[in-house]
Amino acid sequence: MIASWKIWFGLMSICLLQYRVVSQKFQLEPQNSTVLQGSDVQFKATIQEDWKVTTWHIGALQALTVINVPESILPAFDRFSGRFCSNGTKSCVEFTIHNVTRTDEGEVTCTVQGHPPQKAQLYVQESGTVRILGENVTVLQDEQVEFECVTAAWFPAPTISWTQNNQTVDSSVYNNTSINNGDFFNSTSILKLKAAGNTRVDCLATVSALATPKTSSVYVVVVPKPADWTVLIAVVASFGSCALLVLLILGILFCYKHRKEKEQNYQDEMRRVRTPSQLSVVSAVEQIPGQVNNSYEPEYQNNTTNVGVEPGFVKHRHVTIV
Image (cartoon, rainbow, N blue to C red; front, top):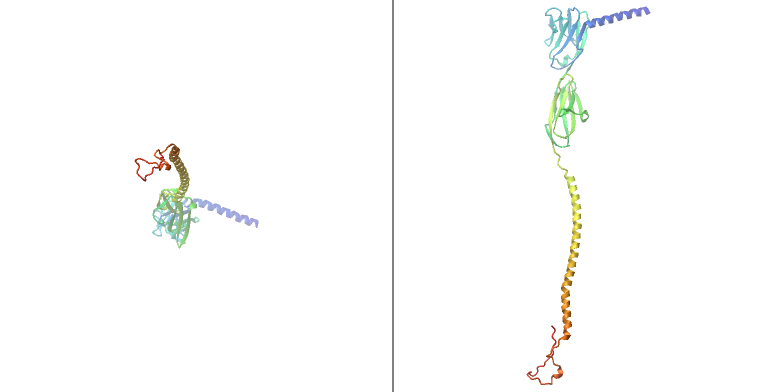
C-alpha cells in the first residue's frame, strides 16, 4: 500500500515537472487585459518549439485558427485577425480582436497542439458622459455653494473626483452615489465649497481603461461681501447714545452756569442802579431843614395891612425842596 502511494506520488511529480517545462515553452500574454468598448486588443502566444496548429477562442466561440505554414492565418470572423510577431519568426503569434464589444468580455484561450491550453482574461469597459448641472455662478464671498455632477452610461461605475483650480479636492467634502441601470451605471456627486475667491471647478469621471478622465467645468465668480449694517448700526447707535448723554450733561451744566451768571449780573446791576438813587433821596431829605421860604408869613400877621396886596390874598410861607 505504501509502495503504491509512492509510485503515484512520483508519477504526479513527473507530470508537474513536464507541465512546467511545457508551460515555459508556451506562454500567453497578457494574462489580464482591460480595454474600452470600441477599441482593439491584442494577445500574444510565444511558442519555443516547432508547432503546427494554434486555435484562439473567446469564451466558447472559436475565433481564429492558425496553421504554421506560409500565409496560413485563417480568420474565423471579420473582427478577429492574426499575424506573426514583428520579429518575423514563427515562434510568436499575435491575435487581435477589433472593435471590442461587451460580449467579448471573458476568457481568451489559446491552444497549441501538444500543449495544455493557456488562458487570459479580457475586461471591457464603457465611458459615458459627465456634466455639472447648471452654468457659471456668481456668489458672495464666504458663501457656501453647491455643485452637482451627473454621469450616465458608464460600465463599471466610474470613479468621480473634483478639482478646484487644478488642485484635488479632499474626498470628505463631496458625496458620490451610483445606480445600476441595467447594463450601465449612472452616478451623482455632490460637492459643497465655501467661496473664497474666483475659481474653476472640475468634475472628473474615469474608469481604469480610460487614459484621461472625462471632465466638466464651471467657473465661480466671487463678489465682495457687503458690510454688516447691523453691526455698524449697533456701533453707531452705541456711540451716538454716549455722545448724546455727554451733550445733555454739558447742556445742563451750561444752562445752569448761564442762569447763575445771569442772576449774578442782574443783582449787580440792581445794586449799581439803586445806590445813586437812594443817595439822591437821602441828600434831598437832609437839605429840607436848612432852607426857609422868606415869603412865608404867619397867620397872626393877617391883621397887618399889607401895602400892595390885594384884598383877600393871604401870603403863605412855603418850603421849597431842591
